[in-house]
Length: 209
Image 1 (cartoon, rainbow, N blue to C red):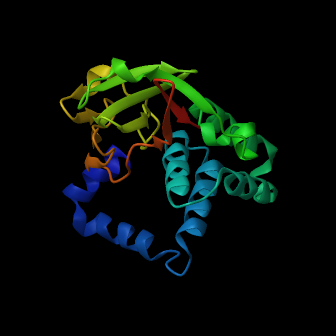
Image 2 (image 1 turned 60 degrees about the vertical axis):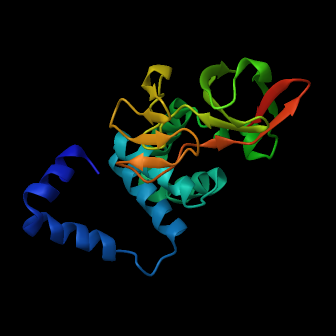
């Protein structure tokens, strides 16, 4: 939701509430993935960058695969045309989503060397750059590690290390807050941080994407 719509929903719920009720009822007989894909296509048709990024993230969280997103874009060619499809793919490339990398699309995930395990104390969190990707590394216990993507799930804003206070990570763009111990969103939003699979090999922490 845009800041303007959020304001109107509070200032004039009597008027704007009908709009949101309409949106809630639209597509109620569709499964969540289908609804999400249709929403993505509407944002591509309108070429709304902010909305496209937000609804693309929602579609992925609803279980849509990158291949399903690409299929939806290509299936909508008769109404979108090549120009808008290319615009959408440009947005995806700019967002640098690892799941859309060609090798990931074909199941070729790999392990990345993140940090030495003795560089992070139990209970501590650090931010590192690894193969061009920002990561927050949290060591919950001696052998319990969490590695999160540094990008906010709302609109893929890259969150800096200075945004971490204690166990709370705050996205500077819209104020979404996350508990770094679990990755859960605890304020404003509902989507958690993206968490990568991890393993320890030879005293080094590795993450997979």
